[in-house]
Length: 279
Ligand SMILES: NC(=O)c1ccc[n+]([C@@H]2O[C@H](COP(=O)([O-])OP(=O)(O)OC[C@H]3O[C@@H](n4cnc5c(N)ncnc54)[C@H](O)[C@@H]3O)[C@@H](O)[C@H]2O)c1
Image (cartoon, rainbow, N blue to C red; front, side, top):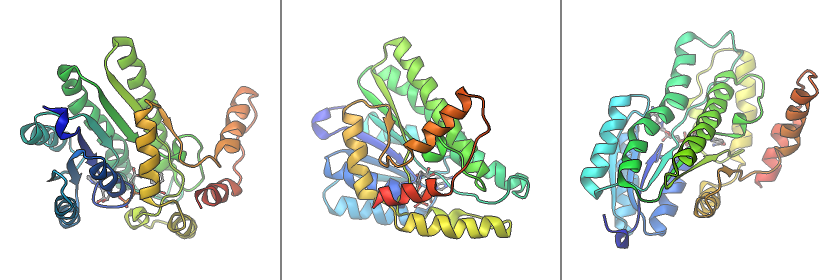
């Protein structure tokens, strides 16, 4: 593959929100794009729009929870562009409600889409990156929920904290090997997107919390602003990407409670802090 044509980025969850913002920004940087999502019409519309703007882009309808479909995504990217340079494991969904009210199927959906998708991406693409032997980047979208837990969003906290742990482990492993593959974990606060449309109502507590989250997210940072920060961080090979900084006192309290062995305490203002910091 010739880099004169621009590096190739695979972006999952590209049809909406953060993924769409990343795709639009990547196209402006001259990258060639492999766009993946479950939403076939949304994906095709984005692909057409980027191509009309002069970008080289292909759409590949993919359920990232299915390992075989993610392997097919890698194969199609290699067939089309000859290789891949950046992988954004970005697709994700939301579920609110009391931990015990969320059904087994809802828990499983969250684990499959938010966590197994990242495992599938790593298992399919990292061996390709190692074979290619040139610089490559894996960018996993976690969340501030990957660092600090809030009540009424257990499957989201659980899967995003697992994505952070997976990303750290992958970073250690690739560093041990001296591989030219860098890893970043993106932990945004509120970003204006459609994620709350994926929330499945289970109980009244989850519903009212969902309404609060929805309004916080609607007032969040734009995906375009977020994408600019992500690309700067990747260019600087930064592992932690924190577009919102308002969570740090909450993280500090959490670490302190672990070190001092005191009981964790949640403050509702932590969510509001992030929303103010986003504006
Ligand atoms: N919006 C926020 O405030 C926020 C904050 C922190 C982290 N995140 C994370 O950002 C990522 C992107 O979410 P968003 O906010 O842009 O939401 P979004 O709903 O606007 O976009 C998510 C995209 O993922 C796609 N998707 C869902 N399930 C899929 C599957 N199984 N296979 C392929 N594609 C699938 C959807 O069709 C959608 O296009 C998620 O991982 C989310 O958890 C979002």
